[in-house]
Length: 197
Image (cartoon, rainbow, N blue to C red):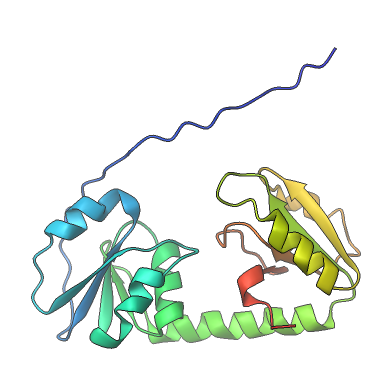
């Protein structure tokens, strides 16, 4: 008898409110946010600002589109993840509603760590390709293309990765993430960051 458990995904529209008390430097500011603060972002009245819109940890296109019109960004949202992607993709500082900031030093540190991962990838004998079955993160076509291009690569598919389990595969030198770029680690490189082959 098969007792497979089927889970359904339920998407709920969530809107957040954020109290702001932050000082921004002088200059043109790009306004970006996570999705739950988009309505509030549209209502912001900041002098010398350019509206960008929603950014994600895996997609900073809205920040990149206004890059040449702004000196820095203001991110209306929680945490550093989405803001860091916007900073890395644009090379500009991002001030976060919490009072935190992604500085030029943070961007350079990230780029240095990425160079280290690229070197590790280039010197790796065996590579594991991570595939998530989550909706919006399931990139099987891209993973299979990588598998065909990369010698000694192996596919690993799961809904939610338990990274402690990856340690069981000691012969894998580096993991290639084809899902959300939030999945990071010392031995994990995002598919988009791979050197062109």
